[in-house]
Length: 139
Image (cartoon, helix red, strand yellow):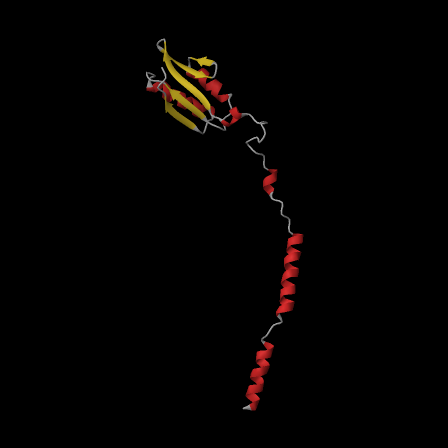
């Protein structure tokens, strides 16, 4: 019996690890990884779409607005100061505009549905992916 107690005591002594040196090793590994790691991210290389101090254009963030009205017995397409009366001239003007922000069609009452649908198709032909149709209560 004395022999078995002795073996049990040796086994219990072998299973104990010195915690002081284990903590030292963990802290050394932690310091090593902190010193050798690079904390710079790739996000600083991306350009921002928004300017922080007035350097950007606010108009570049808004979609193109096309007002469609019925005046003098014909449909009129207005983009800014441009007043167009044919769908081909609208398609040509839309193809020259930036397409990232999309286009919004504000259609007044009294405009034939065929003319509004033709304007939407002109935007598709010009390459706009984002298109919106908004009925307008303006005359």
